[in-house]
Length: 157
Image 1 (tube, helix red, strand yellow):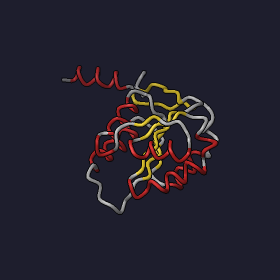
Image 2 (cartoon, helix red, strand yellow):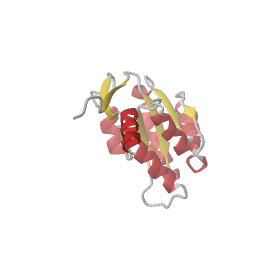
Image 3 (spheres, helix red, strand yellow):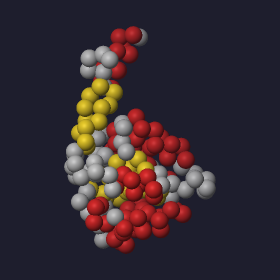
Image 4 (cartoon, helix red, strand yellow):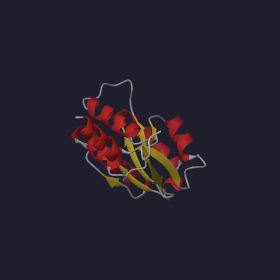
């Protein structure tokens, strides 16, 4: 490995968690949040439009809402991942219904992968993440040093 090829990024003990659900999965998300309310109450929550509003109304948990997915909410969450402001994504997606904003969803999944952000796209994975021993402690992850990568690419061109 080259020197400075990777940089360490700390996930804090208190995580910034994005909660997203397609329309047919919103009831499942609300139920999941209620089941995990105690754990989630120790973290900062955000979500896309309707999902965030429903979570706030049904659970009483504070949650910052962005636009709905089709109106750019997925893109807003992705931008927050890039800025280091979101540490984890719980996204109950509906694989059986066509989504008009599918390219936005794919972009969000890709950016979460690029930035090594834990992402769950179903209840089982969300359960494993939220009940992990790593949930309530700091966690160090290694990311590609993007600045170095750009500098190297510029030199090659």
